[in-house]
Amino acid sequence: MRKVFWCCLIVAIPFFGKAQTPQPEIENLETIQTLEDTLAILSFAMVNDSTPVKRFASCQKFIKTLVQALKNENSFYYPFERIRTVSIIYPPDSTFRIFSWQLYVDINEYHYYGTIQMNEPELKMYPLIDRSGQVSNPESAILKKDNWYGALYYNVLPFPDSSGQYLLFGYDAFEFFNKRKFVDVLSFKTGEPVFGAPVFEKEVKKDETKIVDRFVLEYGSDAKVKLNYDKSLNMIVFDHLVLMASPYPDQDFMNVPDGDIDGMYYEDKIWKFKPRIYDQILEEPPRPAPVLDDNKKDIFGKDQKN
Image (tube, rainbow, N blue to C red; front, side, top):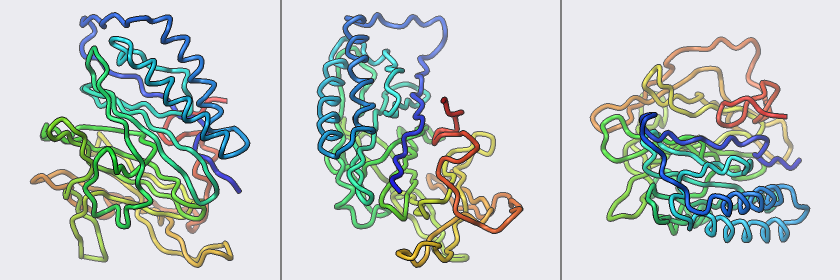
């Protein structure tokens, strides 16, 4: 069954500092609003058109139209709220924003598109080229904008030590039986974005860990898995996964949550692994569940709209 991860992507609204700070005037506001109407139609077609060829054609038109809109002075301050199938996220300091979206090709293939727009009056952006199919081990790869590990991003936060590095949380539809969520590192070196850094401590097996450049959770496509930052705990928190037999004849095993929650806390420039930060008592054994189920929440944890 085709599953496209688009039910209700919420466009994140930027934080622009203190309330008394005036927002710069956006050049050609009416032109951008007209272009947004076109972008809204194209973004819907990227997801819902009937064939890969039509979806790809809509995607190419979307890219050209988006660039046209962003070329207007101070376009960074325009939120593009009507584009529902594209994620737009900002860090708390609003120094940049990231557009990312997904193109469904077939049940085992998804392409990702994205761009980073810097918070400057004149357009400064970094288009991201998805080369995830060429990354054999995503946990051990430092990547740049032209060999990006493509994803649909849902959160971005600065490191606690103000080092200029950012945590970047993403979703990868990957393949029919397995999906991925991961937390990456974004930094800017010599003016260019760099993805990945050896800062995550990952459990390999009980009482054994290793340092990885990118922390990846791969799980059965019917499972619901959490991976995000918890401000109340000052930790990255995620479901503890266990291997279980798959109910599908074409798949032997799959990873699913077992009810425990693991975490990572920041210390000595490393996100250090902490097992089972608190336990959840399951009312029933682990079982497949839709990625977006009856709790009516989307990937960003927001209420879905009908």
